[in-house]
Structures are given as structure tokens and as C-alpha cells.
Image (cartoon, rainbow over all chains, first blue to last red; front, side):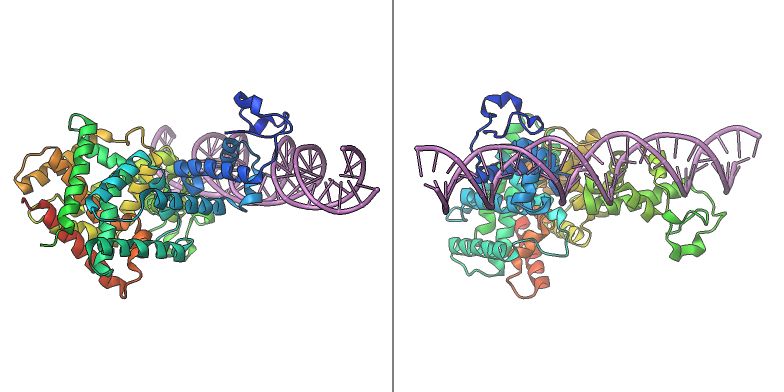
Length: 217
Length: 217
DNA sequence: GTTTGCCAACCAACTGGTTGGTTGGTTACG
DNA sequence: CGTAACCAACCAACCAGTTGGTTGGCAAAC
């Protein structure tokens, strides 16, 4: 991370990076914007919309608070922008369900364990926008999941109907649940010796359940 | 709900209940405490620990803010007390897994759909106490889940080992997941006609998955 | 090639409103 | 009559968003 600004603006800069922090550093609005988005992602994942502090976000980005309002307009709008970003990255990283659905579940399970940020952001978002209304970017997200349902139906060689939809919910749930309430998972598994091993057995259980679920019978 | 206090204490009382709000109302510390706990439950479920407002809690309880500190000491301590309460009620209402595990999943699924408060509180709690540490009342809660693992093992006529533990996690996950990110569930199901019917089909899917999961093979 | 003038990017300092928690006094009741 | 429950008023800290001013960079004018 590079930090820009003049020497006398002490409040917003990490002085350990002072060699980067010199007068004459080129201005770069898009870099500022990106730094803000990255800092905001960490802050929102850690504290949620209401708990996030714009001062902390600005400080972490090495930028003045006011830039948030110049670029995004409000804390809430910044949060929405972060969500768009994160969801795009997420779909790019995980792809659509295909051939081996148990492997798909295993992949998603691993992803959420190694990178809990996305799930935390989704949970904050779900809690923030209560039950009644819908989320921002509703239409876009609806289409995204319709595509996933279609991909799952293709993988099963079945129609993209309610059954495929409920199955998609179940698949995602199996993979994501242990990381959703990690303390619950820990509480249940902690009585058994090596935690790493228990986690691997949980992963196997989820994949086996997936295999049985998609098997015809 | 009854509201007590003197006539001049306008700020903290619902005047529509003025006939209850007369001088000479008997003091009842334990009732005050219970009112505070009930109001706090609603407030915390809606807004989380950080987002909850002690003024709102006191107002809803028809009691002065200061009573919160007299009874519980701090907002955070009040939250912990609410969690203890809610978890006790929850276990009393749902019981342990027994004979028909698919029915158990169906029961939990219905419970969370009809009463999203518990899950919301658990999510706020999970997000609030990050990944690192453990929750308050760790030992008590650990024993509680050990009992559940044991009950599940009994129902399966199997040992209470890691396998039973991972299966318990999976069962709870299947039942609770759709209500955890309800907007996601809605987003996936909204394309299909009657939403009530889709929800019923989802329920059936979860129960069938449970049946297949516990079947030996 | 250099000066000039303009604007977007940037910042420090400020503000009005909010909030968890406290305090000093009042009242019910055993 | 003493004590515990209760309350209104208060306070210091905090915080999202604003403001007025500064500066880097670029393009037009020379």
C-alpha cells in the first residue's frame, strides 16, 4: 500500500511509511477509491454497517475522511459498493456448480473457512436490511442466482424448476453453515481431539450428504 | 404489559396506558427486570449489541434507563443475560433430537421461520464476538451441545463420536440455513409462483436430505 | 517550452446531534 | 425510619457528515 499526501497531514498517515509519504506524490483518484474500498471491506466485515467508523476506514486507506463522501456519498453507499465488489470477486473465484456437486460443496466449504469475510458481510447485510424488504441491486442478484439454478439443473440433467432451486439452497447451506456460526461449530467439535481432523471429517460428512442428496433413488 | 411510576415521569411511559400509570403502583423489582429483559430481547434482535439503544430498551420497558445499570451493570451484560434466557427457552421449546430425525429437522425449520429472533440474536452474537475467542458461558453451552450429540447418537443407536457431532452440525444447518440469510432464500425462490408452496417444497427437500443422510447404506 | 488559469482532488478543523453511563434526590415499603 | 427501587437531569465522549481553504496537474494561451 502506498500513502500519499503532504508532510504536515499527520493525522491520516502511517508514519512508518514515511518514505512514501512525501510531497509531490502523484494524485490518483482511482487508486484512492480502491484503497477506500479495500479498507472499507475490512472495516465492514469486522464491525458491520452501523459499527463501522468512517474515520477508521479513512485512516486505514491513508486518506482523508472527506474523500469517502466525495467518492461514494455516504457510509451506507460505500457499504453497497463494497458488497458489489465482494460478490463479483466471489462468483469469479467459485464459478458455477458443475459435474461433481460434492466437489463443489467441498470447494465452497474450504473457501468460507479460509476467507470468512464474505460470509460475515452477507450476515451483516442480512441483519441490517430486515426481513420485510429486499436488498439493494435486487434484480441483478436475482438474475445471478437464476443462472446458478440453471447451472445446477444442467449438472443434474433436470429442469430448472423449484426442485433445482431448493437443492441449490441446500447445497449452499451445507457448505456455508459451519462458517456462519463458527462458534457453534467449534462448541460441538471441541470435545474431540484434534480440531483440524474434526473439521476434515465435517467436510467429508457434508460431501457425502451431497452425494446422497443428488442420487436419484 | 403494565407500566408503573409517578404521573410526572412522562418521558419513560406510554401515556395510552395512563390508567396503569398511577402513583402508588407497587414496586416490583423482578417485574422490572423481566420487562427490561423482554424489551432488550426485541431491541437486540432488531439492532444487535452495538446498534441497540439503552434509551429505547428502557422506554419499551416503561422504566428508567438507570434501572438497566442497577439490574445488569452494562449494555453488554444485559445482552448476555438476554442470550441465556433465549437459549433456555429455545431448548425447552425444541427438545433433543429423537426417533424421527427428519421430523426434528422439520420442526426446527418451522420454528426458525415463525420465530426469527433467536437466529438473529445468534448471528449478532457470532459477529460481535469475532472468530478468535469463545462466547460467554462457554462451559455451560459446551455441555449443552454435548448432551445434544449424545441424544442424536442414541437416536441413531451409534456412539457419540465425531461422526455424531458432524451430523448434528449438519442437521442444525439444514434446518436453520434458509432463515439465516432469508433474503438469499427469497432471491432463489422468488422466480417460482406461490412462495408459500416453494417454502413447503424446500422443507420437504430438507427432510428428504435428512432421511438420506441418516440412512446407513 | 514556458507561463497562466482553472478545476478536481485533497485536507484539517469544525459541528450538531447522539449515546452509554452517572448522579443527586425522591418515594415506596418492610 | 432506613434502605432499596426508582427517576429526571446531566455529562463527557463520540461520530457522520460539512466546510472553507490549499494544491497538484493539465490544457490552453503565449
